[in-house]
Amino acid sequence: MKTEKKILTGTLLALCTALLVLCSVLAIGWSKAAKTGDALPEVRNNGTAIQWKYSDEADWHDLVALTELRGAAGENGTDGKNGKDGSDGKNGINGTNGKDGVDGKDGADGKNGKDGIDGANGKDGVDGKDGINGTDGINAKSIEVQRAETHIQWRYEGDEWQDLVAIADITGPTGQKGADGANGKTPEFRVSENTLQWRYVGDEIWLNLYDLSVLKGLDGKDGINGKDGADGKDGTNGQNGSDGADGNTPFIGENGNWWIGETDTGVKAAGVDGEKGDKGEKGDKGDAGQNGSCSGYFYGEANSPRTVLNNSRVNISVYEKINKGGLISSYMNNITLKKGHIYNVCLSGSLEVGSNEFNNSGNYSIQMTDGYDDDLCRELTRIKRDGAKIPYTNDQHSFNFNRMYDASNKDITLQLWFENSAYNTYLGGFRGTITITALD
Image (cartoon, rainbow, N blue to C red; front, side, top):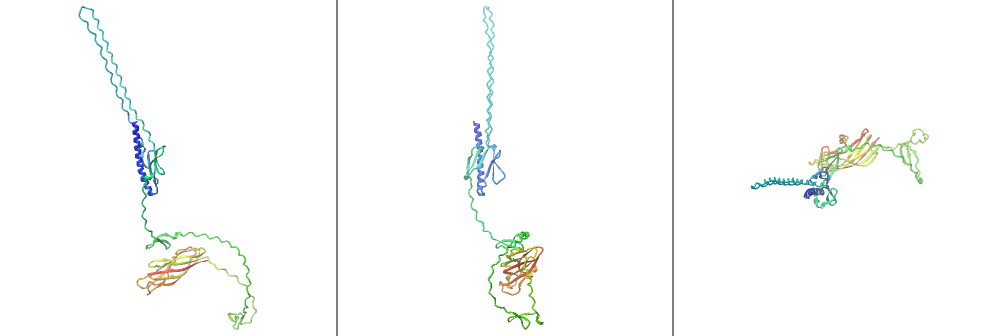
């Protein structure tokens, strides 16, 4: 009975120790879960130990070995005491001698005394009984742990679940609200030489973001010819017009010209010098001329913002308004002319420009590049002023650019920019139109 009590006491102590450790781990886990999104610990019995881990971890950690939860072996019983030796048997008594006197009969020989009865041998001491082997400890049952809705529970395998600790008691306090972050800066974007760039408003340096040339798609397939439209219905006959006034009959005047009334047409009449011949028959009407056409055309509005062009340049943004044929496409200052045609490009508008120099010279210079033949484009579009002028005032100039581009063998992408050529120049702005025609 004492042995069983010791086994039970040791098992309960080990169990309590394991559960206390488990509660500490779970308390830490749930405290962490309250701050990181309810990542709660998991518990299992792998046959040799109770283990735990967080749900987002791969490795299990031993909490307590199952051997520590089993009872100790029973103590050996005490040996039995040895039995006492038996006592020795007594010697027999000799017979007495006869008295002297008449010779009497010889006294009878004394009889030999009887041998003393040997004492019985003492019985062997009863062997002490071996101590009773301690009864085997009760096999420790596997412990299971689970998280219920409101409690952490435990049980021996197969038994009823018992509440261990309330989840509310081991849930850490809610963390304090963090301070608001600083307001983010506003980014701005631009296209520079076929590269999309960005910077925060107010920064000086533009950072490359993406090469726009990789965004160009493959040539689209030719569109399917549209079906002929249904014939229009005959219109309602119009009312007869009122009779016109009588016209003047043409005649040949004295100067040999055709006259209508009092008006000299200036057209010489044939055969004036000779005799008048008979009038020839009226000739047949000639065939109607064919309607003119082109492969496609594009029209858009163009503008540039106010800026200082000191060792820099600014793009001319183009906004599409009309596009027929799908042969011309535009994005910001990029204009693509599709392969297979010759194109006529005409850019015209009003350019406001002034000096940004600090020496009161009033000099400025501005020119355009197209990303295709920049040197020629600069020569055709350069506007310069040399000489005294009121500084920081602007001039208004008409701006015109007209050129044909041969895209017979490959696409051509134009990039339109304004730049200064020699002086500190202030661009007050540009506004204009662009017209592009694809020729057969």
